Length: 198
Image (cartoon, rainbow, N blue to C red; front, side, top):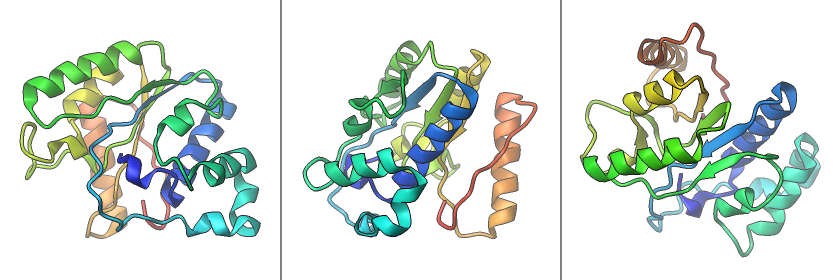
């Protein structure tokens, strides 16, 4: 997650989903933002939905209003953390480093800060780690590591992980990622929420 993209259409969907899950389940949420430094690019700047309240606001008026008010001057995940939209959710907003040792230390902090969450939302830039960008390599911070997910799940915490689609047939991609997550965590069930983009 990069602050520069905060509040785009994908965030509206993600936070709306988190609110729906919380309301339906009563679970205490933990949010691991997996922040990475802003890079100045604008290829993900999808905020036009905020100019169309007649179309989008109906799905979650409080969330829509918060994002619409914040975006002109404040594009940072702290807008959500500082609000009460996710109830008593816990947040971890340390920037994820690329280096192995620094990342292990940062993950220790994640475990500490989110220890009392029932469901942890993990929001990496790209999704699950890939073979071509192993831990310690430049930009590995854009991916959540299987070992990190296995550790959190082993503590009895449910997981919701953001994943970009890749350039392959989507149903087979979803099945492959779900199977990988199931093998990694030993979960009895892995489900998927999908949109046209993610």
